[in-house]
Amino acid sequence: MLLTLIPGMGADALEALRDRYVEVCTEYAEKYFNDEEFDSAIEAYDRAIAADETCKKAYLGLHQVYLYLEEYDSADVVLEEGCLVTGDKELEEIRFKSLTELGQKFVEEENYEYAIPCLENLLEAGRGDDNTRLALSNAYAMMEEYKKSIEILELSLIHISEPRRRS
Image (cartoon, rainbow, N blue to C red; front, side):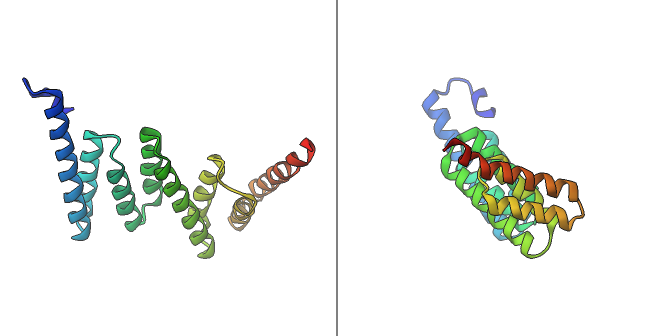
């Protein structure tokens, strides 16, 4: 990190300097976003994250930029990375809410190419339900990937029958 290269500066001063740097980066990123200078906003958020990997505000801001640019995969990757690095449960909830909303939006728009990754990410994280599985199966069927559609339905049947076996 750049700030560790300043000789003679105490740990508290370095941390305060880093915190101020991250604050300035996120402020500028927000300004760039509002001014529709998206490349500059992305760069500023990336700098904030590079200086402080636990900066939730930077992950959320970068996520919003990517959503606005309709770069949905990048938007999810940013939040996934933020969740892994920070362990922040609120960030995780925001990620899953975003995936759910995007998945629903894409299914309604019949944009299955984008719906499928959202729905799959929810299921892989254990956050999807039977409706998620059904929507995913339907999306695969609409993309004429019938084998995959059937596999999802079969997994759903296994998932549904498992609790009954335990009783």
